[in-house]
Image (cartoon, rainbow, N blue to C red):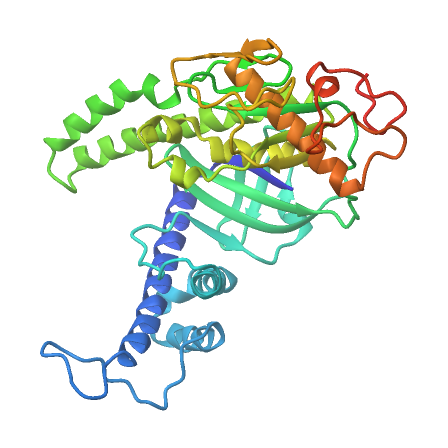
Length: 413
């Protein structure tokens, strides 16, 4: 569990935190430069050289690693006294972050790590329980810093790490707690709910609920435009330029915080209604590159799905992603292929069975049906009562009408 609280540091403590961030940035960039130089020294072809310059590093020099750079950092402290001012583990953790960036590049296909213009956080990886009290946190070499405890900390958890984060609205501390307990997998139980997302309505549920899409960015777009227009006329790096940059950053943080808070509240609202949650498996990166990319990014569907899956796990609600294809072209009542609909056609009207409802609601009901079929196949069939299925093994009228499967593990009542 991570608890995020706002800090209320003194001026001297603010200077210390800023010094920590600046030193961490320099250590990170120096270590990255050392690694890039080693890589570039091995890039030159054997039969010709560049007309500009070449990296000349001894062929016997080993590739810089976390352990070797930590040893070099210890030696550098004897030459540069300013490296002794931050806590030693904070600088070591900075090098570990760089190592993780290279591991992500090798194993997960990420891009080559880049130099940092700003360092926004630093981490204490090893802490003591007595460093956190009622309304304060002790940061080594910085001292006791007041914090605004907006919620109580759960009993039984052990403090593992402390991270200090700088944001546009101030400084925050993230307290990472851990509890040694085995958490079983979320059981398949309760009422099923399908969720379909879109831009006309933010989402539609299989119960017929339509949630209006809030326009987080559009509401403050005028203010951002005004501030950025004023920023254009300021000299880069001046005091007025810095002040406007801070105001713009605060507006962006307000948009981010408002969106995230709304996502959490909506996720809890959906979990209040169901024991199983089914959503579409969508590639949001590709979706954001389409015609409505700006509105898609403003809605934050990817963040919402991550939050929804976490809230479902936390509240013991089964969460599953299903195939997204043709959800708007199938009748949820009779499983008939109705064909592609135009975007201005917001009503689903089945020519086969006459089932009529909102287009997004029909798609969410198809998602619910697919989720139930996936769950059934994973279990090898329901133990007490089998769903009525058609020739292709998909549930039909009983599911679409929201009937009760009495005696089965899906007791919808």
